[in-house]
Length: 117
Image (cartoon, rainbow, N blue to C red; front, side):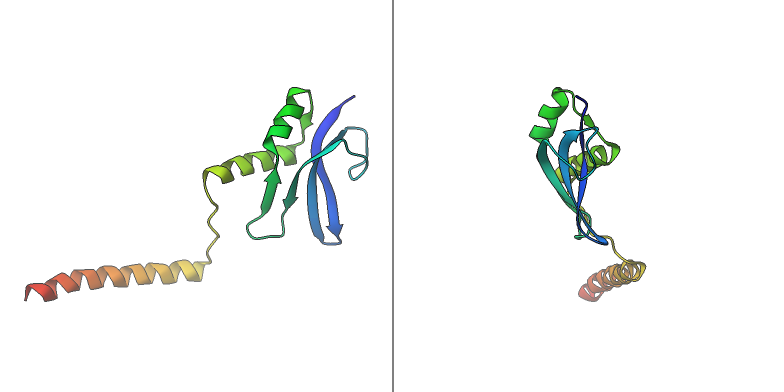
């Protein structure tokens, strides 16, 4: 029996929510599964990735194949453990922070000059 670790789509129309499942390769995408080993929600900010890595390793040791999408999720989960993802900033926000840093640097230069006099 060929076993794959893949995503099963749940949720309503245009609101996807995925379960990471172990299933027979011949069963339908959302059909019969052997075991659920994780969840993935791409709509939250940051994206929610909840995987049981120990179960996944056990299934892989028993011969289960990862799909490309699940392999990418596992890499993202492992990197997420190493570092917390910073939210992306807009160009306006980056420019505003650069101006504030420049103003703070100028104020720091002027402050010691005022103390010396």
